Image 1 (cartoon, rainbow, N blue to C red):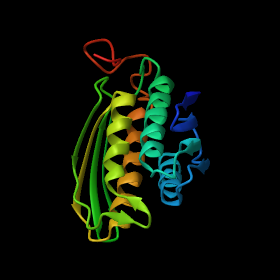
Image 2 (cartoon, rainbow, N blue to C red; image 1 turned 60 degrees about the vertical axis):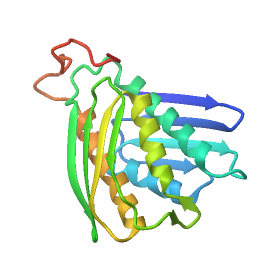
Image 3 (tube, helix red, strand yellow; image 1 turned 180 degrees about the horizontal axis):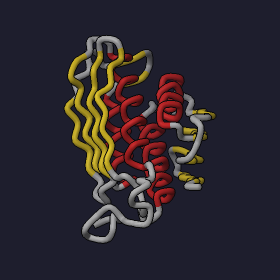
Length: 198
């Protein structure tokens, strides 16, 4: 079982993440931001990852440090859960609709952290959540997890729908990428012989 508990404590946040890749989509999320909780619930459910997140952050400032530090902690947890990446499929891709929104997500467990977005949001906020933090989350996650991540928003005029589609699509693409390839269970899917940081 690929399961990790990861913690991060700074003067700005106190984060604990528990991640099980071979899960059932069960979750317990307490970030202090209702919208963010909802996105992680979608991520857990659509990726079939068991996920627990608790975060005590400086919400009197804003959500920035909470989002960034959860991303770092969750990305680190994923990297540790994957170990040497032996047997994984490595790549994941999906084109996912959410009503009028349509997003394209591609993931490579490459050992090279990179985030490449093509996203335009119709509005700047969803409730009290600044949508620029979506980019902050995925950028920090990709670097910490050492994955290559492309997110393209093809259409969407409802910002909530666009962000929801992104998190659902990311979960499903990542689920494909971390899945064990039954034909190559003992192989690292790289001619380099490693998918660690290169």
